[in-house]
Image 1 (cartoon, rainbow, N blue to C red):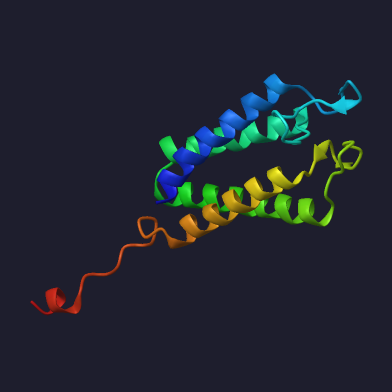
Image 2: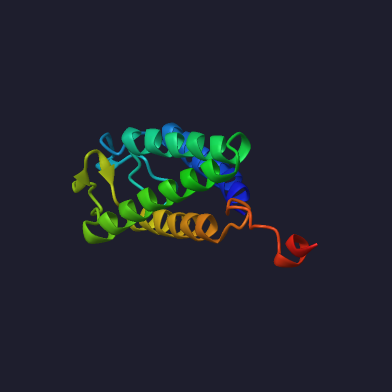
Length: 146
């Protein structure tokens, strides 16, 4: 389950990161409105957030397609914790419509906070519930007696 999440998450975060690079930086105002939005949805994407999304996508891609067993689970749970921390900080310090409340170049809008919270929670659940990365159990006692 961890590898499947990592593969799907890699695609999602690479699309979000590349899409953010194409929409522009919210530090630039166009008609008195910050760029980095998709249609009427105020995302206030910045280049810092786009790079972060691309890094997360690449790391999840490695975990989903190249990493073996336990390493994939450790990568996914680490990404999940980072995303959950971003969501908590974002909900505690949300951005406004004018995009004037950023933290380290990240604008914490509600849609991005929801994406981070859902993706982070799913990552943690998939990594913690994965049985393929658990240590192998010892042979059962019935086979040892023979």
